[in-house]
Length: 116
Image 1 (cartoon, rainbow, N blue to C red):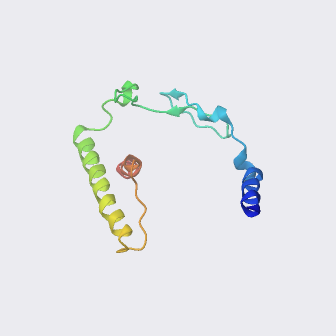
Image 2 (image 1 turned 90 degrees about the horizontal axis):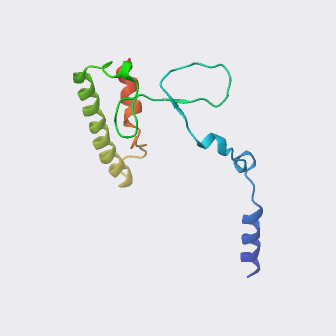
Image 3 (image 1 turned 30 degrees about the vertical axis):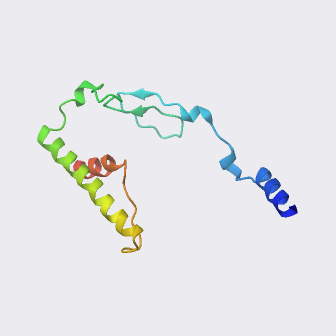
C-alpha cells in the first residue's frame, strides 16, 4: 500500500524540464503562398501549394510538374507504402532486426528525390 502511494505521489511531481513548458502560440498555423527565408527563429508561416481538399491555391505552381512525372511520383509513393507493409511485417516476425516505416511521409522522400 505504501509503495503505491509513493509511486502515485512521484508521478505527480515528476518534471521533464523544458518539456513541461508548452507554447500554445506555436500550435496554430497560418499559411502563405510566398516563400521567404529568414535568419532568425521567429514563428513563420507554413508554405503550401494545395489546400486540404486537394485544390491548388498557388496558381504559378499548378503546372510546374508534368503529369507523367506526377504519375511516376504517385506510383513510387504507393510502392513505398507496400514495401513498408512487407518490411514492417518481416520486422515484427523477427525476420529482420530493424525497420522504420515512412507511413504517411511518403511524399517527403519522393518529392525530395524527384527534385534531384
